[in-house]
Length: 266
Ligand SMILES: NC(=O)C1=CN([C@@H]2O[C@H](COP(=O)(O)OP(=O)(O)OC[C@H]3O[C@@H](n4cnc5c(N)ncnc54)[C@H](OP(=O)(O)O)[C@@H]3O)[C@@H](O)[C@H]2O)C=CC1
Ligand SMILES: O=C(O)C1=N[C@H](C(=O)O)C[C@H](O)C1
Image (cartoon, rainbow, N blue to C red; front, side):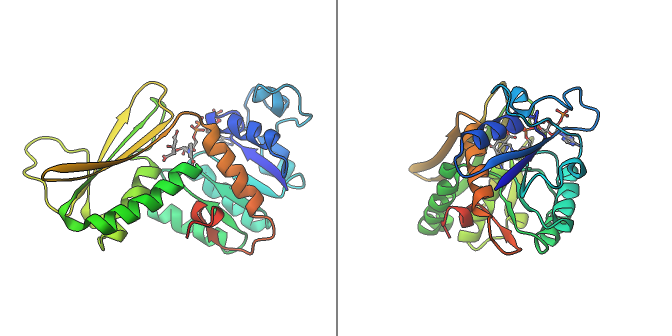
């Protein structure tokens, strides 16, 4: 599989180029930058700090349409939608790690996946995807007696809140408890808010320094508290997962998949 990376000079973009370079079953086909970037034409390996790989970065998907089989996209919601539409039109597979999409944008992405296969997941790490399974089990066993709170921490540059991962954790717990997250989620409490209601699921966000990504889910009742915690210490864990997803997409039919499919956790 020849893999293209869009947003190649971003925090995830550079890690993705490195992960593709390290993998034995995929090759780097193209690297795409923001139009007008001063790095257009530079070697993708040099952008990622690896030395020359012989792939000059371009400024649009149209410039490299014949050079890749699958696109990996960790960018912004609006750009991801454009890229997914391009992949649908040109029958290219796509791995989407971008977070912060609203319901309408997710529906549009799903439409694109009907034309060409897509893996879309807010967190590509193996450990975090296992954590989702642990959360479902914990929620099923503990039930409504335990208050659920989700705390996430990320670096100061992150633009969406709560993180896509925290929201997915909330969805998994809500589903296991027979609740609808849209009805029971409470975000960032402040002021005279009154006592906690039994079925709410609370979200708290920390943005500070260079934190790669930390998620902690509390199940608390009178007398005890369980915390299920995942801490990412390197973006390479997300990048390796995304490359695994790209490789897994080879030969798959059109449709929307997630990392639970890739990791056979369903
Ligand atoms: N699913 C997962 O496992 C993970 C998901 N994420 C998500 O991935 C996304 C990106 O995160 P991160 O890498 O930290 O963000 P960055 O801002 O570092 O990277 C985004 C990149 O997209 C580029 N870009 C913007 N517009 C265009 C365009 N029109 N064409 C090509 N490239 C463009 C930016 O270029 P420029 O810098 O020139 O503006 C930048 O390099 C976020 O939504 C984040 O939440 C992050 C980590 C893990
Ligand atoms: O923006 C990030 O950095 C991350 N975003 C993802 C999210 O929103 O869940 C995943 C990871 O925690 C890093």
